[in-house]
Amino acid sequence: MGEVKRISLTEEMSLAAISRVCAHSAAFKAEYGYSPRAFVLTFGCQQNVADSEKLSGMALQMGYEITNTPEQADLILVNTCAIREHAEKRALSIVGQYKHLKEKKRDLIIGVCGCMVVQEHRREQLKKSYPYVDFVLGTSVLHRLPELLCRKLAEKRRIFGSEEEYAIAEEVPILRESHYRAWVSIMYGCNNFCSYCIVPYVRGRERSRAPQDVINEVRDLVARGYKDITLLGQNVNSYGKGENHGVDFAELLERLDQIEGDFVLRFMTSHPKDANRRLVDVMASGKHIAHHFHLPLQSGSDAILAAMNRHYDRAAYLSILDYMREKMPDIAVTSDIIVAFPGETEADFEDTLSMLRRARFDMIYSFIYSPRKGTPAAEMENQIPKEVASKRFDRLLALQEELSLESNAPLLHTEQRILCDGPSKTDAGMLSGRNGQNKIVFFEDDGTPAGEWVNVKIDRVAPFALYGKKI
Ligand code: SAH
Ligand code: SF4
Ligand code: F3S
Figure 1: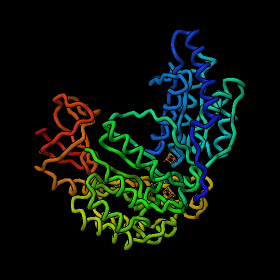
Figure 2 (figure 1 turned 90 degrees about the horizontal axis):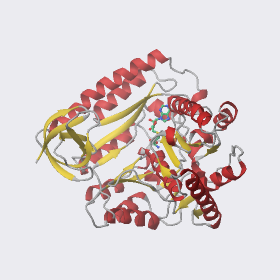
Figure 3 (figure 1 turned 135 degrees about the vertical axis):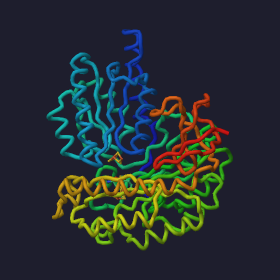
Figure 4 (figure 1 turned 60 degrees about the vertical axis):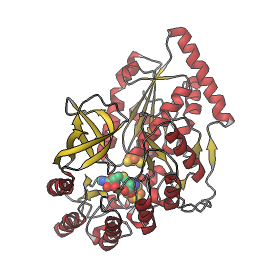
């Protein structure tokens, strides 16, 4: 894969498109007295959040202002997710609601982007049943937004192309939502083809950015005052595989850790089959690397793991987990679990529960299996009935709640260094923030601004949060 094409937004074609759209924005402003506005709505994972920051960045570069209200927008971009049926339904229903906006404002442009529209059946559905959608833009061609918008403004035709271009686009402008937490994509795509998962079909094959591009971006973020930087990839720890620069994920992390400054480095998501001891050693000896590992287990049953095509078993998972805990006793480990994969028996599910007790995750994200068109698992026999699935799901959550509380208990009366996120969304009068282990901490609002470090003495622990007082 040393062959992956590297392109940049400063290439001639994009520049021409950007300046044409800019001219359109200027004409718009001359006519209406304000710049055209773009609204970007994001579904799905952090990768999509990061992609949306690029969509906004490009819109800004083309003379748009960014708005939080779709009613005000002249350009709406919905960045979709396809991971479960629910995510697709929500995106489609929101797009459906924009029909009346288009009726009110005929020049409104609506684009549907991201993972969902890489699937042919969804593209067809949008084309046929959502006539007010102007264009679709797949995950690997997001950086083509200027050209697409330029065409759309000139031709007025709907654009439903299916071209994907699995390149690495550098120099795409990013409009970051936060001034202290930043997402940095380091690799794209996935080669694993877990039998339930749509990602490899909608994100293409794995490809990694050049190490120097990543290092430069992180160094620049630190210099601009960013304090919490998360490296992103579908499988961050497959970073560098198949590339000819010879830098693997552990090595990249080690190099990034040498950057001077007061910041924390995180990464998401790792695949257990590529989580090796060297990576753990680099984390343990790092100055900036958070002691938090998100390591999706998916199931505690070896038979189900094999059917999922995960390439590890319970023993292998526990071996790397135990090593992490040995090297970093304060590490927080979180995981993803899928309940009711086709063929999951009661005994398989019990294996998942027993694995949770043994692994003692700090937190899990759990999902009921959702069949995805075109994946092998969707064709498997023994799909599990909804009622069985939701009972298992509830049992899983109940157990994890107990375990999460147990994992937080030792933190009572400790001092935690927190990066403040500002006022809590749920508790009036409280601020919230996160510690190195990514645990959420609430403390009394004393006006500390978002983006500042604070030390908090913990006086109460709950399963999914810690509470305390600033010291
Ligand atoms: N690349 C990451 C994340 C993939 S998506 C990884 O490999 O771990 C995030 C989570 O969604 C997965 O870990 C999995 O638990 C869940 N997921 C993926 N496909 C799913 C499906 N078809 N049904 C239910 N959950 C799914
Ligand atoms: Fe999906 Fe598996 Fe790839 Fe994760 S590793 S994105 S679960 S196919
Ligand atoms: Fe969803 Fe695509 Fe992420 S399918 S989970 S937005 S990679």
